[in-house]
Image 1 (tube, rainbow, N blue to C red):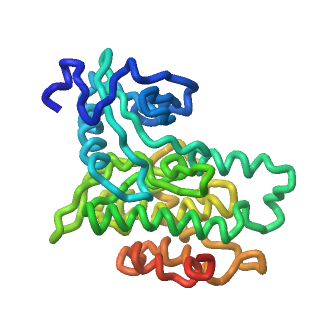
Image 2 (image 1 turned 45 degrees about the vertical axis):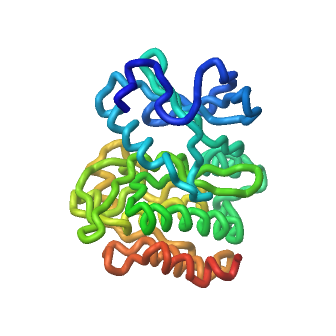
Length: 289
């Protein structure tokens, strides 16, 4: 990071002349994302641009680089290189051509055959199970190998490609945890998907990501966020902490295994919430593999 002001490549062998920037793919918390062609390799990549004049974003950048460099997990987006240019840093990341789960949800909701009153899942259970299995693999890698939490699991940060791979992105705000204490106290991420203990400002650990996963699954089932919409943090805090955890409808369209899986993700008591490894061995995952 000491050469950030020189315009030299920070990581990898990336330079602007090698990039043919294409369409805008979206906008994240820290900047825009574009599709681009890396001309020397012929590889299509996603270019994420972050303004580094803002000190909090510079710290975000440091975290991103630490998390991205050197990992070999197929369930996390791959990092190819980065460079500094005109007050911003450009990351070259693996292109996931189907976009995020948020995009998938939006497409599914436009299906003329979807009837939200029919009591059926928006995304079929076998598809949800395959998605969930890959999310759990990514989280297990972060938790067990990297000693990190993701801390911002939401549909926007779960990416999909046409080959059926599901990968976690924006795990740069993940917090490396001490092996012995394994707790964190900082308040980051998207509060709509935060676990009760995080909303209360308590110490938290890996179980916070499991709560967020459960909320994402309920959203895949119903096509909508499970708590009452609110622009106020305190109203959302009250809803998450003082109303029952979301549940799967108890009808013939949903398996008891799915209901049990989501219940195990959404226990408010962190001691009852299951780990990534336990959930990967859950009957709902195994019956669809």
